[in-house]
Length: 119
Image (tube, rainbow, N blue to C red; front, side, top):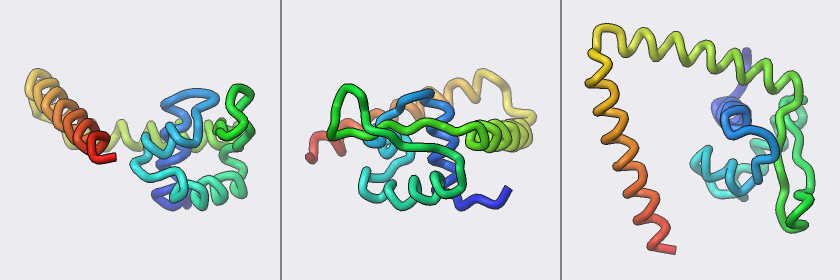
């Protein structure tokens, strides 16, 4: 698999969030602004991994969906990530992982809330 990190991330997040994710929501999931995601989506479309279409409910918005090859790529990325997680977390008690995950999610929510307050 020879993908750039941005394209791989966009494909993976499209897979995880499911069909008809808006370009705006995908940009948030990837961690970039919508404008910055355009080039990445162009590359992913050219590679036949995903497609954009006009939203049926908001003509100002685009929706993003995986193509069959994009689904295969996303599943391969998930498989590789699972192997990395197993290796990294080997020997760490499950309860410790749950606590760490809960703390990191709380911190993430605070960052998002504070960034949203700056707009």
